Image (cartoon, rainbow, N blue to C red; front, top):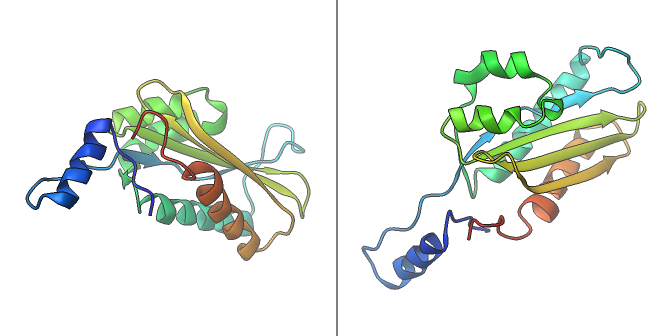
Length: 173
């Protein structure tokens, strides 16, 4: 299990906590995890996602949420639902996700989108940004070569394991 700390002091507190009973460990960073969005560049002006695409977007969002909540503390994004809808798509809003995350009291913002290349080829992109600065701390991409629930979920798990949480986040340990 990877542990992410807000500071070196947090890492030291955990180390002391393991050695000395009664010493509290640092709380994990708070994270705003936004829903994965669809980008279909073949459609001018965009379009709404089909029901099967909406279901798969929800599936990969849930995979992302499950994987990140093992090391980060999620915040509820519902209080900013109006702003999220107004700014959508978040992958094109040039830092608005970090601003929304900060308003929610989060330290980090996680956004992602699926680029539809064809009916069978998709690119899944996910980024973790610092809510205070908007700076991308870690990002990953995976190509999905089949339009199934398993391939989409596998791609998200791979990104989280091999790109997002492969090492502690910069300036967080």
